[in-house]
Length: 453
Image 1: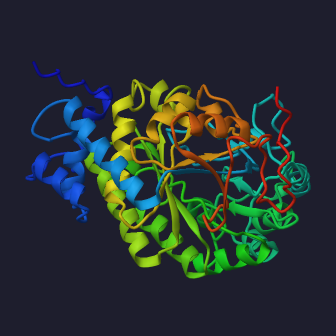
Image 2: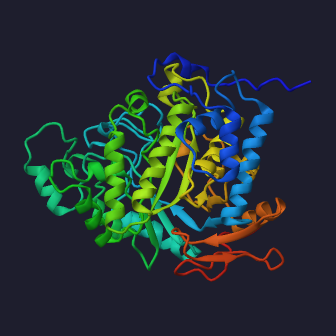
């Protein structure tokens, strides 16, 4: 007797009358055959694989396993048995933000940060000097990369010239206030890049949304923004703030954010000045499978144009403590099977991106390892600090040691490999040769990042 289809869990998505629906004229069997043969998939193919057939309700477990198997085989053919990770630190500069994204609980209303505000709040802002001290300390522990993704603090400007433009502009819609009005000055974006550019560390920062904030009121365009940031020490760009690259979804979950076209324009400009970049999707909220695959198509097209995307990172929506959940717009995040299929279809659809990441911050260790058999080959990084997921109600830790990585990756029969941010440097770790520590960072010497128990 056949197994009953697993039921979808994100019923609230059906409450939104979106134009794009997960319906196609393709069949699941044809889509799976194309995936197995390596033929480039269409949007309809992707929807069939993501839904395990749009002609029926729920996820069919037998079909799901066939998709996962095809993706895992593709992963083995494309990148082999290595599982990579990077020694890194997250240094998010500020939680002050007025964008109002309904999926986010990382930000705090910026007016709470003004000197006139008397009550306590849980947010933070770091000066460039504080950022430098944090990165300097982590560099001595052996990190290769510092990642910095922050709220859109109204006092942030790109550089001193940009601040002069903002100070003299009489428009009231630029979301700018001078640093003197706040309890702590975040400086400029370029000053923060210079501060974090310590001793040869790789600076991974400035999402398209931050780049938009860094050119408001000026007529420079994104190429000028990223060129100035690169001169200040920026080495690569995180493709976050993408969420879902379909505007009818963005209008629900982040109406104050840049549009799909703006995001793509910013990423194209980053590539034009020679910056490597990552790509992401944040799924499991109000969107449906058609939106997810349309998003994948836009990422694939961006990579066709630029060739600068090093990895794709599926980010499963953490719903607790977010406005979407508190307002009753969603009741949960993505189900386990949706997570598996997101990883798998990303591997099969994104035929021009080698590396797909499984996030232990989002999924935890056990599930994160399971997703490495669904098409993923990268397992994030050490992350000496991580505030965004934690503030949204995430349950998992803030640090993974090299010992953790070796133990987990070898337990599933794969090969642990330390990597650089841009996937140009690799170092295999020998499970029989402890202790384990980073060796690729500017000051790394193989010493464990934290003492082992």
